[in-house]
Image (cartoon, rainbow, N blue to C red):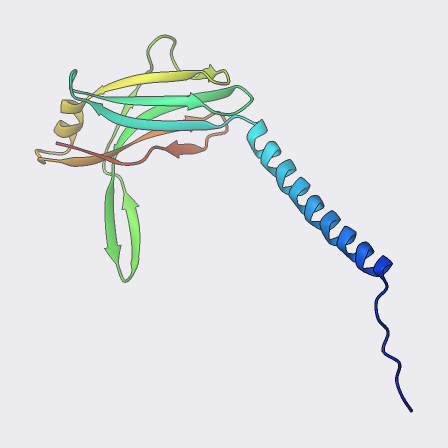
Length: 156
């Protein structure tokens, strides 16, 4: 008994190619929909840097999303990393609560708007109990009580 080998017709190859292209486009559309949904709400971006000319630590909180965001609290905290057994834990011993320029907190931030806060670098070093250098991070509490933070910076 001989088996007949079926060769795909040109129509089958074209149909499979169209099906594969359609699948790739559908996955791309789903990814784009998720990205646009993710970007549609409020999104706070927090940066922190030292202004050497004024001796302050500047905290910028910008709304990078499409909806207004509410900021409830702004703090500058120290950052201590303890490593043990291949894992690390981030601790904070102190925090300096601060208010932005202008209106008091809680305060809404419209899309593309920002808040600026200046904290005296000397106040952060005084909280560190005489340490020569301290690593700090800026934290902001959103309206839904979620805390967000900046990258850590080292001040001397």
